[in-house]
Length: 217
Image 1: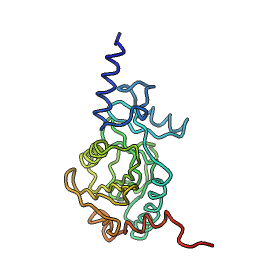
Image 2: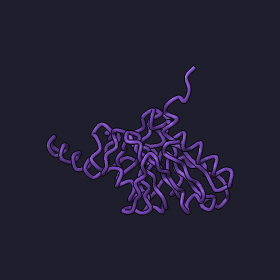
Image 3: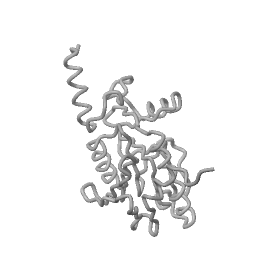
């Protein structure tokens, strides 16, 4: 039987491998190492809580009200553009995706081209075996830099072509074109869809402007 010291050390190693996430974000039942995709689906259905599956561990997805609002603004703008040009599908912060065996991530916003849907229909599977072309993460206070670097690497390993990390606290963003290549976008700059969403651009100021009412009555 494992001692308390051994369990503590094992948990510390797990948290380190996950990018230094807070212990409270890792679900202990089912125990880390044995969790499955079915657990992800059942917990969300039963508790309305979102967990990503990483190395057999369930890691709670961080998302505050402000971050969710920013994601919704982007979904509205990106979704309208994608629909106008019939480019594919845009999903939101509950869009679970299987990036690899045993790896489920849930981007805050994701775009998938129609080319990845052979029958031109969104799959009914709650966790489709699907890597988006664009993955967007709106950072919350609980996200660590190393956690996000791991996510970026996983996204590109799965076939994602563009990753945006939007920092709600600093009102800046990073646009990754590879796990190690990125452009820092200041508040007066814009996110560019490049060849992933050709022609789509959105100013960061547009996303953050909607956090404050423009007029007073």
